[in-house]
Structures are given as C-alpha cells and as structure tokens.
Image 1: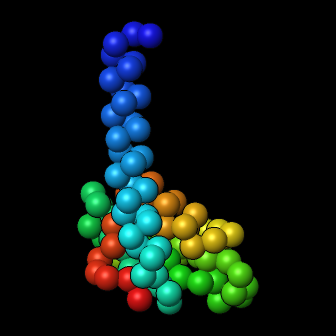
Image 2: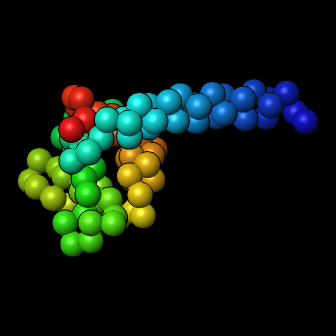
Image 3: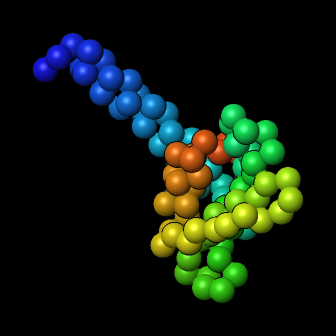
Length: 96
C-alpha cells in the first residue's frame, strides 16, 4: 500500500481510538444528559439526553444562538455520544 495512505489510515485509527476513550468516559457517568459545545463554531451547542417521547432512545438536540435547529434519535446512549463527538462537539462540563 502507498505509504501516504498507510499514514492517513494510521492517523484515522488514532483519532477513532481517542474518540472512543472520550465516548466511553462520558457514557460511564452520563445519566440524565450532557451539554456539548462545537469545537470550531462557538455558537453551536447540543444536548445529549434521553428522548422525552421514547425512554428507550437517546437524542441529540442541536442549538444555535437562536434556539433549537434539529435533533436526531439513537437506539442507545453510546451511539448518540459518538455521533455528537464525530460532529465536532465536546462536553462543556461533567455529564449528569
């Protein structure tokens, strides 16, 4: 394989491993929800919480400076947390 591609894939594996550590740590203490801020766009926030319509699901609610702009539902807490991390969000403070 091309050495440049090997480097690209190795870097991607490293980023995925780091993301998984953050996701595992966050999920271990996440019960009622967590506020997250986008890493590059300061006015974007999201909340990862249990879904209020279906308690078996978890939800990401995305917000900008004017209020809610959308949401996505997931079958479990970890999937919601990983999706938020992949979208560039990071916890604002300790999960609750």
